Each structure stands twice: as structure tokens, then as C-alpha cells.
Image (cartoon, rainbow, N blue to C red; front, top):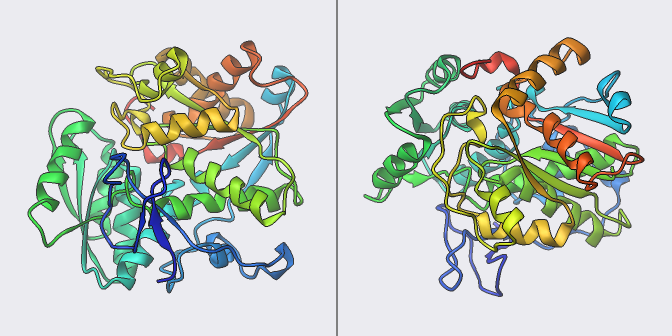
Length: 374
């Protein structure tokens, strides 16, 4: 496979390997990069994320048709907020969330390395995506998920034939369990939060938004943030569009967390370069409940570089936002997705987003996934 792994914080690089690798100097997960081809948008073929294959790892795709999701105009909420508001419906992906984009690329790369069995920890959506794409690739999957996760997500994982390990306790307990299992050798850690290949699939969203908007980009994109892969994927993708000369400016990207677990938002408010230690409590937005994101330093550096911001929103407002999107826009999302609406309201109050701007909210998962309390 052409390309290399590199540290986003220093100049360290090395050859690609299947497992996540951390920089020996900075201690952060390495990223993947390859030389960008000298092509134009007119040279792209196909649909979905593999339309952007010239910019992804050079592997045979394992695909279920992920990507190419609708970008629709808000009919009510945007007008009331005073912005041109667009909604990206990632729940339209094959397993119902944006995680399919990353899982497609990750599983494709691992199959290219000859990997037969993968393992990951997840609050549900990433595990469901990996289970589906592993099944598609003819691979085995062992997935460690909090026992309190949505029953619908647990059923979805098992439906694909994956081995489901229900882990009692908080989200972090599932992460510890999979590290212990993969640390014994013989099992590849297909981490959606640390793999250099998962983010490659997520960066396709930047290319897709550019084409969705008629070869332009919005002023601002607002995303939920847990492990930060979606935020970093967009940051990387828009950076590449700049390097290619396809765009003249990058949109600002802001991240939203739940107040119940907001290590990045707290660090942002305090001007810290690393996530603030938090003791998470239960939140309806389980997909963003990651107390110690492995790429936290990289996320905070990218936020400063990009000009966006990180905010946290309270529990009751998340629940109301889920209902508002369903009742007023006809869009049923899981609570993790709904954090972006109160996040946008807070960004407008703080002046981070201006009333004249075009804003895209990334609605990351379908309400049919059935998070607790949804």
C-alpha cells in the first residue's frame, strides 16, 4: 500500500502497519497520508466515498454503498436562527450512521494486510459498522460494547455474526477490555478512535460536501465530538482540498460535546493543549461520552488552527433538540446527533457563527438506532 504513517504533532513517520501505532516522541496516534494526485473534480468517477479513491489508501474496496448521503436545506429552524442552515443526513448510510465511511476504509485496508479477525470497543454505532463490513469482507469481528448500550445497536451487531462482548460499567471499561484482549497478540485492534485508516474514510465527507454545494464549501460545519474522528476527518479533507487548489478557503469546524462528558470543550475554554480530566456521568448522547479521547491533543491543535470552537450542551436541551428536528424538519436522529442544534445556538450567542453564514450540521446517526432515552 502506497503512503506512510506520520505524527500530526512532529515530523516522525514510518511504514504502514495494520494496528494503531503511537508516535514514540509525542505519544499520539499516527495518521495516514499519501501523495495527492494532480486531478480535477471532473476526473472523479462513481458515487459514495470510493468516488474519492484517488485520495484514499490504495486498496480493493469493501463497500456497502456508504456515502452520498442527502444534504437538505432546513425549512424552519435555520430561518428562526437567522442562518442559511443545511443538514447532512448521515443516518442514511447502510448501518444508520457516519461510522460506515470509516469502517469501509479500515476494513478494506486490514483485509489488504491479510487480517482475518478484528476487535474494537464502541458505544454501539462503530461496532455495528465494523460488524457489517467485516461480514462483507469475510472477516471475523469481536466487539466490546458497554452493557447499557442501546438494545437495538446490540441486536444489530449480533445480526452480522460478530462476537459481542457486553462490558459492565462506563464506556472506558469497554476500551480497557479490548486493549487487554488485543495486547495478548494475535488479534488486530481495529480502533475507530486510533486507527490511521478510519479517519481516511471520514475525510471523504469534506470532498462530498464540496460537491454537494456545487463545488463550494460552507462557512461553518458543526459536528458532535466524542473520539474526534469526524472532526479530524473533515479538517484533513478540507486541508487536502486547499492543497489541491480546489477551494480558496477552509470552512471553520466547531465541535459539540455533552456537558456530562466534555473534556475537549473544557480544555478549549481554559486554553489547554490537552483534554481536561473529567469524571463522566450518564448522558443520553452516549456516542460522545469519551472521557479521554486518544487524539485529544491533535483535536485541540486543529481547533486552534482552523478557527472553530468547542462547546458543551446540557442534557435537557439535547432531548428537546432531538424532538425539534423530528417535529419541525422531519428528521429523526439519535440524541448524539441532536447535540449539534443547541451547539449551534451557543456558537451564535458567542459570535463564533455569524448570522450571515452558511452552516452545515452533521446529523451523524438515525433515530432508529434507539439510544437510551431517545
